[in-house]
Image (cartoon, rainbow, N blue to C red; front, side):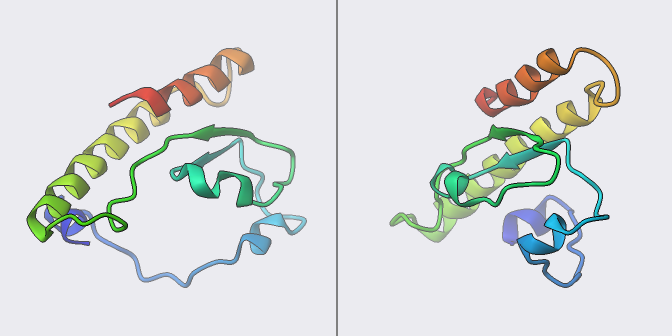
Length: 113
């Protein structure tokens, strides 16, 4: 949370949603499902419309024996990386273009440092 606040990103206090809420009929279908943790990739539910998936794996910062200062620095680096990936994702031609090329572009963002 410190890294998020330090980056000036406001957090909304919306209620949490269960995966099943997104699987109901009538809910907007996702084009992509992006997982940030490889250990949960196989646990994600099946999505309506079978959207493309991508893994943008990040290390588990909480599970290690990292000191507070190192943890905050690592969280800031991770946040900046995720922000850069999302900025690039938002610039991709999601509504038009070659779907296969787009799928590769989204998956390739997982290798961006």
